[in-house]
Every structure is written in C-alpha cells, then in structure tokens.
Length: 63
Image (cartoon, rainbow, N blue to C red):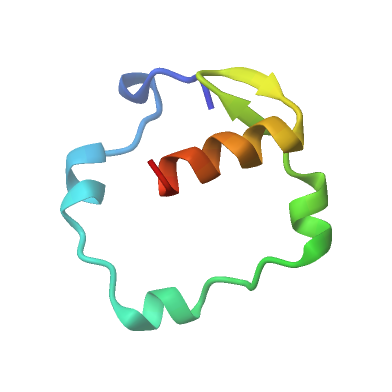
C-alpha cells in the first residue's frame, strides 16, 4: 500500500492507540499454504523471488 496515510481518511493516531485483545486475534483467519503461494515477496519495495525473500527473512532471524 503506497498511499499516503494522511490521505487515507482514517484516524491513524486513534487506531495506533487501540490495544488489540486476544479475542481480536482469534477473529483472524488462518493462513493456508495457498495464501502463502500467492504471496509476493518485497524488500524495500522491490519485488524479489520467494527464495530471496526467505533468505532475507532468515538472515534477520539469525544475525
């Protein structure tokens, strides 16, 4: 989403201040393998291959 937050029409300060409850997490759908296969990996806004994205993610987890 490249839209400027000031143009979104949402009160971002109010949204940021909202504490997320455990019940709200329960409402989230589970990610499936099909969801992940459709995903587009991006690093610094540039689309990369899934292997490049996974390697970058691993490097952040294991410095």
